[in-house]
Image 1 (cartoon, rainbow, N blue to C red):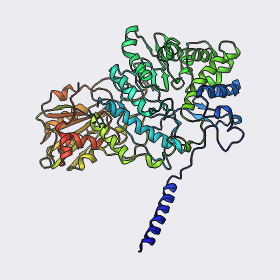
Image 2 (cartoon, protein in one colour):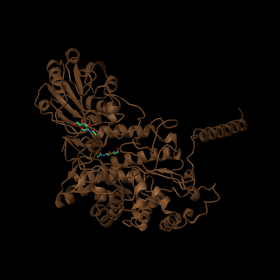
Image 3 (cartoon, rainbow, N blue to C red):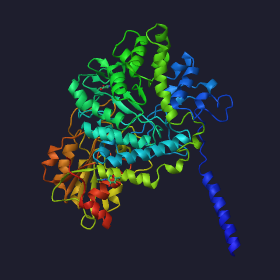
Image 4 (cartoon, rainbow, N blue to C red):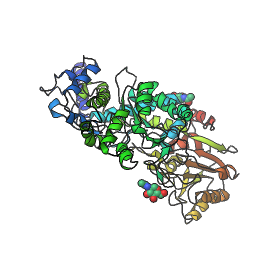
Amino acid sequence: MDCATLIHFISFLFFFLVLLGSHSHTGAARPPFACDPQNAATKSLRFCRTSLPIHVRVRDFIGRLTLQEKVTLLVNNAAAVPRLGITGYEWWSEALHGVSNVGPGTKFGGDFPGATSFPQVITTAASFNASLWEEIGRVVSDEARAMYNEGMAGLTYWSPNVNIFRDPRWGRGQETPGEDPVVAGVYAARYVRGLQGNDGNRLKVAACCKHYTAYDLDNWSGVDRFHFNARVSKQDMEDTFDVPFRACVLEGKVASVMCSYNQVNGIPTCADPKLLRNTIRGNWHLNGYIVSDCDSVGVFYDNQHYTSTPEEAAAEAIKAGLDLDCGPFLAVHTQDAIKRGILNEADVNGALANTVTVQMRLGMFDGEPSAQPFGNLGPRDVCTPAHQNLALEAARQGIVLLKNHGPSLPLSPRRHRTVAVIGPNSDVTVTMIGNYAGVACGYTTPLQGIGRYTRTIHQQGCANVACTTDELFGGAIDAARQADATVLVMGLDQSIEAEFRDRAGLLLPGRQQELVSKVAMSSKGPTILVLMSGGPIDISFAKNDPRIASVLWVGYPGQAGGTASCRCSIWNSQSRREAAYDMVPTRLPF
Ligand SMILES: *[C@@H]1O[C@H](CO)[C@@H](O)[C@H](O)[C@H]1NC(C)=O
Ligand SMILES: *[C@@H]1O[C@H](CO)[C@@H](O)[C@H](O)[C@H]1NC(C)=O
């Protein structure tokens, strides 16, 4: 090939690559939410002019709406206003520790079969590493924007959950950064900053700190969250429950706060002007919107009987400072409340100004999504090796070594040639990502992680975490007798702790403890106990049992949980770099 041909060939190759490049981004582009440049009738409306200040555009937009149109915009599945070129919008998406499909605003499939699934928040919080929290937020919002650009996700994410995890039985404690107000506050501010970006008034995605406030009971001993009245002293409110929310608004500059189902001192939080209008908006100056928990306005009317008519419930909520209803209640009852004279249209305008301002800060009134910042993000920006590595790194940093007698950890592939891997959580996938998750890019289970280093003998020991029988104990004990070391992966999953499922006690469920003790008694080599859980587990028995050499808490360690538990904590790796990690296996708690 002579030089000219070579140049020709290279330029052809380049052309081909460009073609290929533009081709690999073929997923259906999302049509603009508003101000579509193709729509001659609406593109030049004043609220579409990006050169005007946002508050001017917002006022112009609201001024054009009829009351009937306004009330259809007060709910999560906001209606379209075709005559103004506005399409419908689903406000409810979730991104607690990765883009999630819990809310109807986000779905997986097509170009987006999955998204990076980070460890559950209680695990990531245990790293005490604020720059890690922000970095995870940045990665999650990259993936969220990529999915938004092709119509698979929203831009308003009702995460994080920064309720204080005070009652250890709470089924949703796993979602939170724990019981410490200061840690929860730093977590809130940094995760929110990661999600929302740091570009002045412009938002990458809009985060939401929830659920304000004093919510740590789902369903316990005949009381559920729809009927729970948290009694909170002024001091506890100030020193404990307000701390993470205040940090979220003041330092994280969050675009939204969600009120909760429960009452605080006899008043439903979503109907309490002291909490919403005075504290969040008045004292903390929220630049954003306040949203209800899903159907919580309906709940304080139907379940708590807080008002005698539904119109009063709608009026009380909006007057207290609520701007958006997750659920249909406000779309159904607000107009009648105004008719009855218990609410003014100006109150509705105020609520809409708060939601529409956030939509404008997100660029939703700026025309083509592809022409905007982050408009270039697509399928290739989701589940990238770098993102998946961060999920692994987060698990590695969050895992806590509770006991290491001997020390028995890390194990060595030379001395421990065969390892018995036992327990109901030893080969799990979705258990590792906890709740409010999405579809992970892929998983490495603990069994697979250990299998990369050594020969394994796998035994379930218990059919599931409930572990009601000892049928499978025999096989597990035999495996431990033969192997050079034993790793038991035990703990909880969503059948024990979840939304609407609080725990009845703090011990390992069913006969798990008995399995652990019996296996440890028969083990030829060291016994390592690995616990998956969000809430705390009383493991005094293991602490005091000299046959149990080591205990690791891994929380719900995310999609890479099996790799993380093994690479840094259980195995003494060959490479110098990894050996350096092994010098400090993990930090001791506090
Ligand atoms: C915190 O996390 C970041 C991101 O993974 C990492 O680079 C840094 O070393 C961590 N800091 C500490 C103190 O471990
Ligand atoms: C609450 O828990 C009880 C058992 O303690 C259960 O029977 C009931 O169905 C639960 N309620 C809901 C709504 O899940």
